[in-house]
Image 1 (spheres, rainbow, N blue to C red):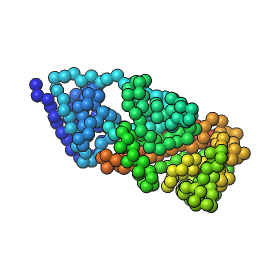
Image 2: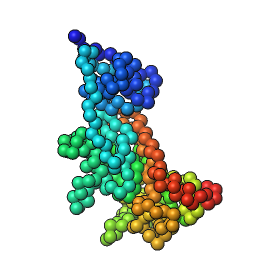
Image 3: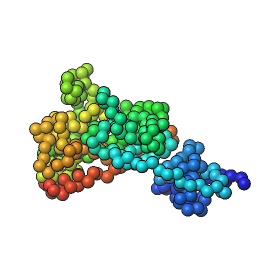
Length: 312
């Protein structure tokens, strides 16, 4: 029996590729997921195993399968409770990290970091058969979106975009006190002291340029929820800039701890969340943009504190 090789150029964006494939083959969703799992689906000539991935206008969706074979969905490895998948394709994966897990090991050699967890997921089991290639990091007690390359070349291309300040990186922070004015920009050179803390310096030769744009989202009693757009991505950049302005992030145990406590912030984490991540796909050239919901504790804190006034 000859194999079927239907192709379709997407004339409209689709939220999930499995819906487009199902329309092509007219089979149940379980069969369609089996096609993805058995490598029968490609997008723009590249194998695609993520049935839930979106498709853009103009992309070429192609199948190569035996209509007499019963393609069964393969059992999925249990996803880690330490991250959720925001986007995945053959070349990269965007995950939403929970607070409390390191992105990469320290000198102690931890094996329960996010990079290990993502590698275990890519390996479909506990044995690390595939690597997750780091592109950027989040602090242990910060939650939100990160991208990993599935190959070193993809990770390197993404790192080049970050170095050129091209990706969109938006964070939400809850800062102590009433930040003024309604919007602004922090610009300084960050250096590292003997305790490995970051600090701003006027000596441009001693530090690296750090630029943080911010805008107030809501004023709460004793705190301000702020939208932060990173132009550069230095270590602890948002934390340092807000702390040096006298408005440290709630829960910060490193910078301005004398001000970072709030009676209604009872969670052992930073009130900092990487909400939006956008970049150009280094292989397809398509724009990838992911957005993560705010953690429940942010809403619970706002409910406990109520509104402390206008945004201005």
